[in-house]
Image (cartoon, rainbow, N blue to C red; front, side, top):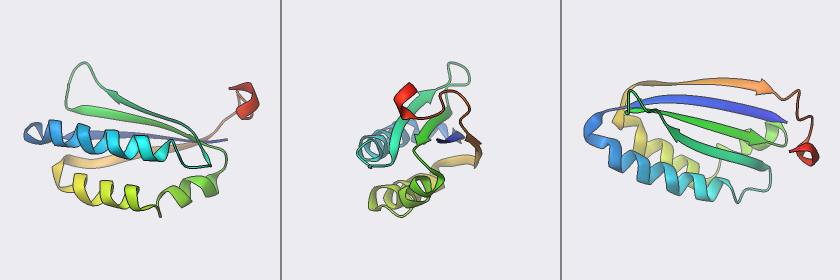
Length: 102
């Protein structure tokens, strides 16, 4: 499995818009055949920091996600709302080894 963790910092005047856009993207991403998990979290402090925990069956599924209409709409909408560029880290899952162990 392929795991992507993304941290973002959002300008305070755009927090509500950002959360709405992220929830819409999350709902659609969870429908993708290669997506196993898509968690959207907000930091307790500072509350303008957010975190995505995304799990895909394979790296190719993550790349397909970046071609979807909902992702492209999300990316184009939220980019100007960022306080700084998003930071992403990509991992290969060791445990669980596959979705049957999830």
